[in-house]
Image (tube, helix red, strand yellow):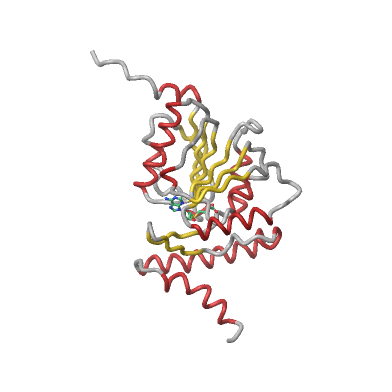
Length: 248
Ligand SMILES: C[S@@+](CC[C@H](N)C(=O)[O-])C[C@H]1O[C@@H](n2cnc3c(N)ncnc32)[C@H](O)[C@@H]1O
């Protein structure tokens, strides 16, 4: 029992801290079990000496509670391997980067830079430590930028972007995040991919004037590994700046 106690404390701390509905606590326990089993199978942290697997609740004074759980590593490899990247042209931006699992995997692809945007200071600091530890020989990009900030305030700059989203927020914030990206595309038309894992609010992308779905994947029986990839070409983005012709 003495050895079980730390584990039980770890597993139950999140739900007990959470003020939310019972369903949130059950969901947390499910996610804890899932992440534990996935780490046993894929051994991501065990191989790289990182700490990305355990789900965490973070309470932020500004924004109530945030739930961190990592994307399955093999899902990120599958997705990024399928995007026809022009080497060193695209920035990878993980919106809601948590402890940095997606950032670490992305560094094995030839991105120009890798940006993590995370609201929780504690998770942001964990990601910094994980990046310091993660040094596989296969790493192709070590230009990391970690930003502890609200996704809604992020400036997309003017380079091609792969925006990665693993179920980070609800519909309303997602709508604003995508609207900000579209506004950036209107100012500076360029190629952009949006990768959305566990796409609960895919309708936000479906209703966009500029994004088209280019791929969907992941097994249906594992909704947390389902993903969609939407793309906007520079030409489509340029059309955002044009007014529609007047109706006659
Ligand atoms: C499901 S986790 C995804 C973690 C990571 N992207 C991955 O794939 O491993 C969602 C993360 O989004 C963060 N988050 C939620 N709302 C946010 C916001 N408005 N701005 C920045 N980060 C946010 C949470 O704190 C949490 O770490």
